[in-house]
Image (tube, rainbow, N blue to C red):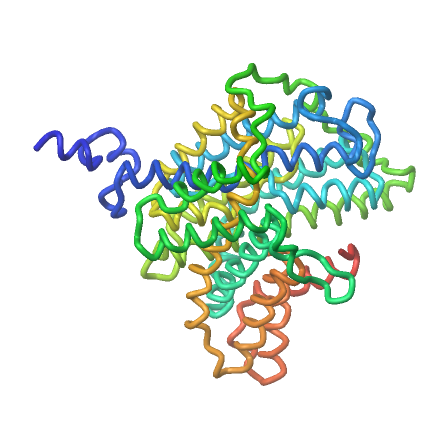
Length: 474
């Protein structure tokens, strides 16, 4: 009897810490979910340093198109970014697991990293050190509005149909990410997008992965996503997609010193010699953009995944929402100190949730794997995007289920919900989709004499988003 309770995680340390039985889960399920989440988001370990180096975060200190050979091996700044991602993601995700007891992984956001590089550094002309200072300020702002419950109130004021639409929109968005990273959908100057070349090994491997994962899911195979990713990676070896030529089973972590505490506050406030007013205007808009995008990326992910994982309480609130938001705020501040961009709750966490992850134990597993990645970066790097892309497509399918609950009979509800869903994949941004829904919701209600149905915070948010799009275009 004692053995059985240990197996089920009842009565032990893990049960007391994560309340496994209360959340209807087991140690085995949480571990599988943690591995699945990590493998699905492991691509960020390689993508983010390669995007940051283009901002000038490299030994040469130059901005570029990423064509220069600045790998983890031969550039200390790129190596520093890789090490920092592992450390920051491990710390942030562990806080999410132990403090909030939620199955979400926290790491520097891909979209926000792209905005940092292409928007703030390359377009607006800030140095990466100045941009890091802006990220640090936005992190402090996050902590302030989270402690005062403002972030939580923003989540609570979102209309029911917008919340449901967020879930469906995220489903479409991450499915598009999966189709794109797997080579099934490619850009086309005439039609915007089109099919990829299905005679090439990469799209073929993605199709194999989707079919394999879909069959396993339909047959309710435990750990279907994780097993499929591993099998697809192996199949990719003879196809020439999985590169094992430079695999390193173990190696010592690189130093994070080159990017640690590199924020340039003085340069931020005197940017381009435009005077204190001009500099402050630029800084405010940059900080506001970091803040709004991260705020609604995180809220979108939390709302969307909570609906899918049955983590919504009877009063409509999300379990441990304030703790999750505070974790994200603290993580952003830590991230800037290590030389990284704004963190966010990763939408890829839905892959682990789809595998049954319901508590912070799965997040703790992800955190441990990030630490191990410091030493086994060579192994993490061999998993091709074509092996993880199917997981995003399958999770997208699962999340689309919620669309049946959107009230399309009331057009004042239908139009904002539609734009919330559609704009996410079409603009490649969760935050843009939520912004569109929030802007159109009060417009539709005001125009039909139903302004009392709109929370005051919704008017404020709509105004802020309109200003954001006008003053700092995409």
